[in-house]
Length: 300
Image (tube, rainbow, N blue to C red; front, side):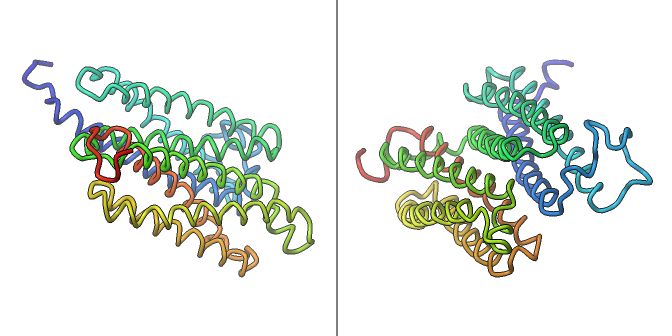
């Protein structure tokens, strides 16, 4: 390849930012597919791993549950290929990219390998709740890493002022709270605690912990987001979307309990909403961390 045919620095960043953004959407969708697999009790529909009934494409055994588990694995495989391409390309073009991007891409690749191992263990160990929960949390960590990588590649933070040091710490706290709440939700879901509590009065402590954890997180995001949107132009859209995501999450949580978990798509949408909120808060934190030292909010 001649020097003239090499993509320019701007083209390289555009290409990688597009790939990273598409991977972020794919990861959030993958969380939804994983949620559908759990809700439809399809986690063991394929009794072996990585094949399904000893084949790449199960034939006679195919039904809705087998399809969900098979498609979840296929989707994860293509996402892993995309992350491999992102890591390899960012390493080759590292001189033209923000310093953190190759490291983040490499960490995402390592994380997806860990995720694959946890996926295998969920099948071979017959869905132990600790492994199932770790599988979900690892997926959300991947979402956060790729969201950060996307923001750095887009270059938006470098072109705008940040909100200030204390607001950066506050955004980091909100992201940590979102992960804790997701962990509580994962522990509740992996033990079917909500359904057991509603039908048999058992395991209600997990449902109560998840509901109690939702209140401070929702209150904090709804309090912080409007102020950020008002005083921080470069983070306005992300802040507004974060507030909307929290409102939708609260509504989905209430509806899922009012419907006694009888509508699987509501439960799946609630899990997708958690991944989306993590992505939005990680993006806000990245914009705050990597903006210039000029501050739009306070002097912290």
